[in-house]
Length: 219
Image (tube, rainbow, N blue to C red; front, side):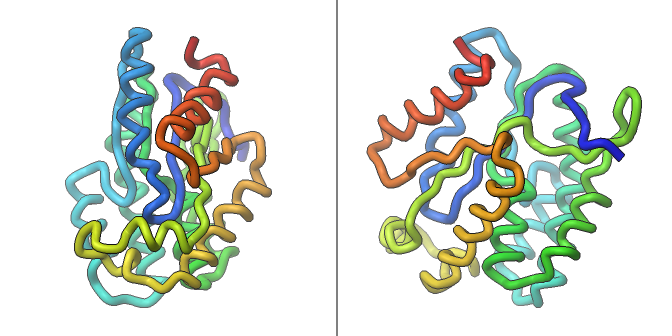
């Protein structure tokens, strides 16, 4: 089974611990692509479809063990892929997704300590899609990782809103999540653009823009 090439469109995921500020720049990148005539699909995980949004609410708020959490996240991802991401890519859209599978390895794998081998099996099952020549595992063409120290992220989240069960975790949890992201980047360095999120909003935006421009997707 090949890890497939682009069938149509462009798939960019945005990753980072809660408080890293990634969501701030997704709309900005969407506008940049639209300004060059590209159709853009904005979406998120868990979520992105009516079913996946129901599962998102459960994952973020209900008590459960790490395996149940991981299974629900991947169930939501399967529906999201089939109903949203794959059709958008087939149309030639730019898909900008607030989190994807790297978040599962970071949060459930790193943060919760769930079995990484099991997550890899679920990743293969859930993300296998049919290509022109062979089935392949759908991954983003680019993952923009907003890397921020856990202590600074915690300061940003203080008083921002009522935290969900992940946002309410202690700083040590987010250190493990950050390590989970680092491990994923180490495994797939060419897919990742690591952004220093402990910077001004303007500087972070320029880094995001340059990461996309370096791949020839924006001019």
